[in-house]
Image 1 (tube, rainbow, N blue to C red):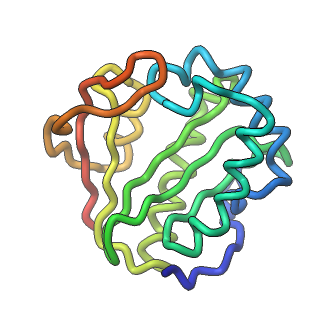
Image 2 (cartoon, helix red, strand yellow):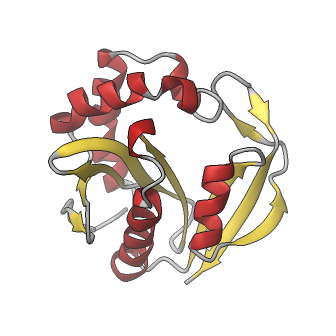
Length: 176
């Protein structure tokens, strides 16, 4: 169980807000506008709907309480993506994220990920962060490199994506 309060994290340019229904409209619009880019990597991008987004927000608080927090990435009051952690153990978490296509290329994911990693170390007592990225997902591989992750090798069995089913992926880790 996580005792972490559901409070926002402020970075130089962004606010990372715990996912809630307040983000539903923005996140739905961002995912629809970015569907083509999300589909290869994100299984949930296959079935985008306002109800699916609402269901995601419904799950956010109990998942946070179970140790897997998710934050909406907010730029100037608009949610443009999601970043979060999946609890693997008391000290190990997997980071995941997506960003609206029209907001990519500005370093937002790297900035948000660094803030979440620092928060995880300080608030959750994380010792290791895992990151899985498709071998062809050049943007995620670049984020892992910029953040200092070490590539472990290929992810055994691959990784589930939306339009490509299971695809080969790399596994990375960052010891804190």
